Amino acid sequence: MTPQKRRQPDSQTQPPALPKSERILYELIKSRKNTGIWTADMKRETGLQNIVVTKALKSLQSKNLIKDVVNVHNKSRKIFMAVEFEPSKEVSGVHDIHKCIAASRVMKVECTMQQVLEIVRALALDKEIEELKSTGTAEF
Image (cartoon, rainbow, N blue to C red; front, side, top):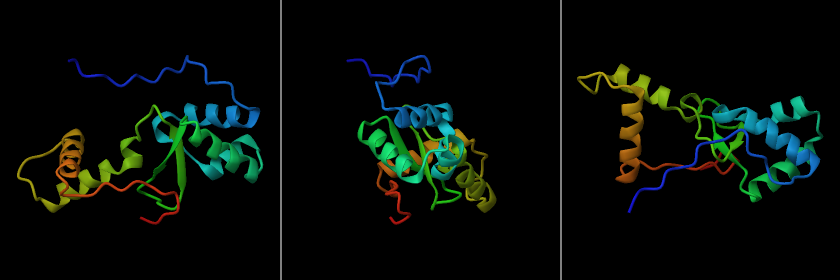
């Protein structure tokens, strides 16, 4: 049995048939790749009304085309990205964890950010730490 690999994001694939407002937002969100885009920036860049943006985002989420992620630098901001992308290190906070570990001098050797990310994932799998998913309301 061979392990399945996650399909790489392909910018050439066409999104499914979407209403105009959803298509505009989906293309904008997908263009931001792994950094995502804040809701207020979407409204400003598209010129769409608040209610239209909110409904379109809910519809895109229900169609599993986009997801919301927590930005560790500003937890109250709702950031959206296409489902095929993983959040960048700046958004996910791995860089901050790396700096904290280096400053605390807990480890005798230097660790790369990739090694820190692997340690954090292993701790989450061992249930030593708990991974929290955003509810979008800044409450956990």
